[in-house]
Length: 184
Image (cartoon, rainbow, N blue to C red; front, side):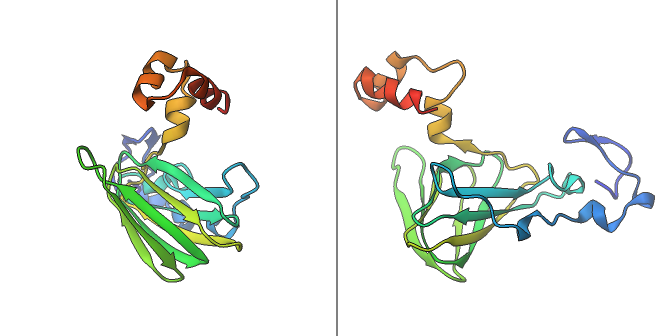
């Protein structure tokens, strides 16, 4: 966008290319490990259009994912991208689920230097299977990939999805739905 005209793209005005600097294309946040002291034991540090505004229209972004021992990046989807994960440290169990009607799990254990692809908009996850920390870098095919964490979306929506819907969809008792909703 910095090379285009001064137009409004992705909620921001494109910058005049005559005044562009190196800082318009720079972000230092991926050098800092994420804080994994949370319920899931993982932290995603994005480097997308929100952190690097001049990614507008370039169709690419990155994220650093830090995992505590046995930490989980929970089942989620990116509605606007394909993700390729490069694993840097530790041992990681990864997978995605194909779409209906098969809903087939495609999974693999990754080691340092391994790469795994998560196709656009499919539910996927990563789990650190070791008692040491793990780190990965994800490259995403959108400057604004979005993320929908499945459990948060289903059980933590505001307002809440009706327990009648969730008990039938998940074929569980209302007490289970109430408990899960209370976690969010």
